[in-house]
Image (tube, rainbow, N blue to C red):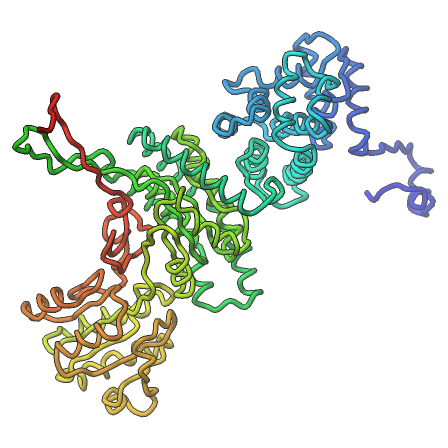
Length: 640
């Protein structure tokens, strides 16, 4: 029935109905008046509720009067002493839980990041109502926001013994900071009630940690330099703590991250959809959009990669090469973490998880600076990582994400040599060159992925077709996709007509040398020298006919990027020569270049691919994130 306002009551249909029957109008209780209605109904059953207690019940029932009556009926059976405060009401509601929201409030006041994250995760696991936790958090923030000066704590309506907690929290940040967080609590409330977007638990987690100081923002720090320095200091401290944790603790955290990824698939897909929509609106190219996109299968693969890392042997602490010296001492190596790893990357959300997993297992702290293209996705992924860190009782600063998209933060990060031990760029050539030239610490990198497949005269051509098609078209926007196909002249006339239709069917543009054009026709575009150097990251392939194995190897050496190169041949000696003489991080025989991947190599995940020869080469997994130190064992030995 429509709302019975004065105009409706004067209509013919309502007048006729009123004359034929007794009409009773029940006016709905406006939400703003619901606490007073609850107080009134409470008195009817012998309950004296203070205004905060009534508001807490109103927030729980969300306007449902029947639910409100049922709550009051249950309270009347508990024989609570009147008057009933919100604190005593909340204590009664939560008395069956091992973890208490009031402990969460204490952690907030103390700025205890680890305990706050731990308590919030445990309360969530126990099925605590998010609205009750929000009430506790809002109450503490409201009191802190009312303090213009820490000395004003004396006027707070809290027990005397708790006032020092509020005074210390007030000295940690100005009242404007607490007021801003209180506004974010209002957004969480709207999300709980379904009138705003967002996952309440994730939002609550971020507000709680921001209240403890883990959310580093330019609103908290006066300068960008101060922000980046704090990130570096926190990472260094976390690295020292990680050096003491057990393999079991690391594995427990990793398995919790994997489970959080699976459980958060809808939230991750929603966040990624925001990034993809923004990328289209900004006119980003198809290759970049392809790299930033997530799918349920991709999230499952990320989770499985984390599980694989957890199942890998822990390299840290491994002692090797112990030998006795003539002096009687033993000398050997112990494998140790690098310390703090900085990673700067573009549009690859899987890097966030791969980096976190490998750095945690290898005992390294990490600072991640993702591109603006994946900002929303990274926030959701960071929530999964944080939950895993809490589950493993690891320091929450072990994985930090730079909270600003200001490009000046990259320059500052590259200068933090006193905190960051190694830098890893993941992205386009421009980013890698920037990091290489400006970093004050060692860099693990590759500039290009100009990968080749050479079809030898002794190749099995059916195999060669399958491999060469897969190497190019499995995915275009990745560094291990083939960019140039080399074909021995002895089989070119037979092989090129076999493979070309497969490329045409998939929309791949072929750019060939004159001999390639002579075989396939004038529809093939002429290749230039620039094509031999090109990393297309798209549906374009350069094709060249060569006369010998030596010519193929020379082409790869001249134009390649030392990333991944493959040969198709059934001739053993030819394969051995190719493996020995091609100077690339990965060299393959009768296999697609797309296998050049840490996951496929059994590393669980990779943090990047290095085409350098020091300190790591190829896909960088656990071993690449460690170093060795000498250890010496003696028994009172002295040098004479």
